Length: 510
Image (tube, rainbow, N blue to C red):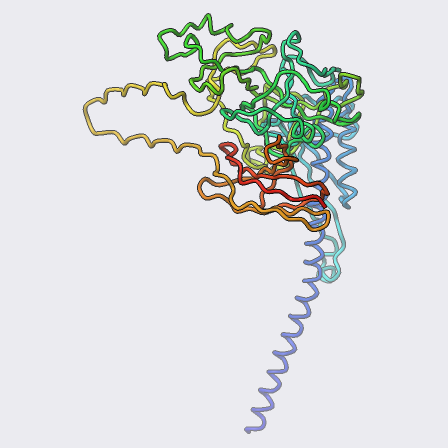
């Protein structure tokens, strides 16, 4: 009796083991199909992403041309289809995205030109494929379908990096126009251009040096520049810097509408009994019609120029003359953040993969310059300064404290919190430099106090010489190749501006 019971239990155990092995085998078989389905899903996401980005890029380039010169919607669909098929997609649906996030179809064979930016500001793509199963076919599932979708949208750049240090007057041009940039201080040309000091946001005072200008002209400024910011500038051009650009190079240029010139004249002080708006409206113009007086009680800023940046443009160099660069303004895609729609679009856009119901904001760092007050007038097609806006920065020391509004009887209202002041970083500390062969190694300590977003490195051939911009980094160390002996210092940067310089170090030549 006992032996029979034992044999029966052994038989039950074998059945359970056999059943478990079958389950594991089936799971392993279906796991193969599930893994393959996951691979196909990733492939379709790649197809949708690539097709959406390619379509958005072609759309924004086409929108920079006249309607009769644009590619057709059918041609755009062919481009989208080609990129999706390169990633193994079999069927593709493509839609235009309107600025309000609604959509309409992009059809194969449609001969109409691609729509204007106010009708289409992005591309939606759904990419699908059918693929055979390995083991699921034994339960009647011989084929599986996998789809993925992606959206790529774009808008006029709000901030951008890679800029040349040369600003252009807003009203002078449109995309497609030919243009010539001349060297020299062209006061008779109404100061339509000027060299920018990218390290000098209001109220900093400095002047762009030749080393920095040449580097920025050749490589672009590696920090971010934002609209509604004021940078110190020198009207006119330096020929030696202008010729750093090469034929075929696209220069990314800031666009300005006004030039602020600081004055200590009490007739331009809105808080002075001597304030005379009619006088002040023309007091700073001189040979520069776009100049607006900005009162300051800081005598070190008297006579300094700051350009008010409102947009960005791309200039493709087609010829280098003895004193000029010839070229045309083109549509261009940059790294930065965007705003959409924008009345100040000059053909420079930022493009990003986006998601439905999310605002089209790029993922770039916060611009390093605070915006101006919203009361500052925006430009029209032909901007003319009709008011005297105050540039961004600390309030003048003689600005009166507003008189408190009488509080009506009743419960005491909750006081409004005082805004936290925007503070630039302190100076980096303990900068050291060394050499190993052709490599220079720099390192420093992060400053205490306000947070830092990046560090700017500067160099010169003499300790008290003119320091030019070398590069930006988010690290507290940097290395590069040079056989020259140079002096260096570092400045910390955040969203409020640039802090003071660190100690200086010398690295001898190789």
